[in-house]
Length: 71
Image (cartoon, rainbow, N blue to C red; front, side):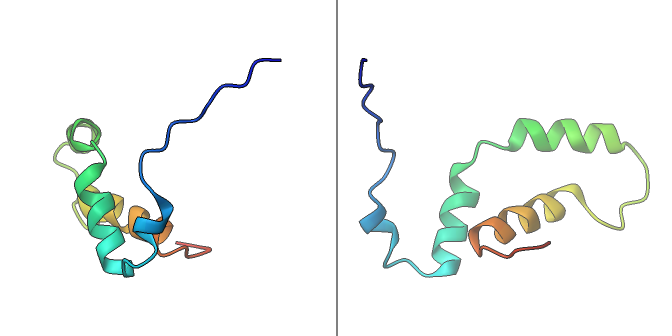
């Protein structure tokens, strides 16, 4: 059986000393979500904007980074 080596994108040891807000900032700056945001905002159109798409998306990402069990 062949063993396929896994590439590491970052060192976990480099992430450990970061605080929660630094990790969230790193995620928000790194994820290429602009095309997704444009699609979702276009799909919403001129509907009610009680919950802006970008704010909701950032909330979901923050929940994952902060390891919240529910959103």
